[in-house]
Image (cartoon, rainbow, N blue to C red; front, side):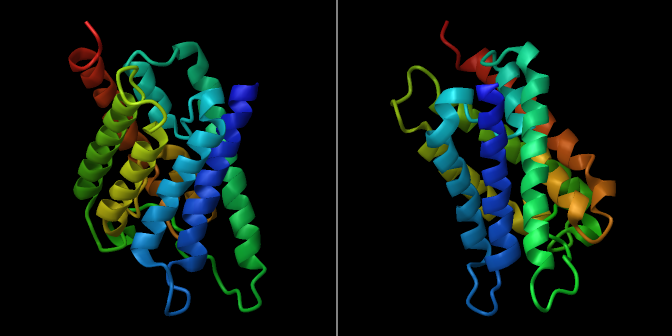
Length: 228
């Protein structure tokens, strides 16, 4: 249960901090933090929670990460369901709190896109489904390679959260204009549930592509980089 609570709180913080920065501060009103600030916010959420609770649960905070670690031989299949459920509950709870805050603003009209992920008409810069599939698959695969490599027994000790957090920051710098950056099915699900628009109809992509990329990366790491 300690591991599941750690995953809940870690995923809550990721969604609240990352998506919250996008919802509240990205363009506020003219001197907002912008894409760079949002990208950094997502990286900081993972970095801080990896140090805070990573030693308890491993600091996944993402169903794709759990599945990628399983594929890489670093996580047991029997724990997958519990982790994924805890991550989803944490993400949805954070999105619910964000929704309560947004809807209690004095001039509230609509939540709008609510930092949800999308492609086509729902892409921040109009990128197609094909582009979204490619970028979400590729970036999640590299995210898992960063995680698996930096947490390997042969890697320098104590620096993995920094590499992982900066890796997630870079991922967002690349792909916010394309899909608003998912690489995390829990994060995508939580925002789509509250956003205005047809975001839930596109959720399948933000489960399929990140999970596929993570699993492929796990198998690659296991085959090429594990100790003989």
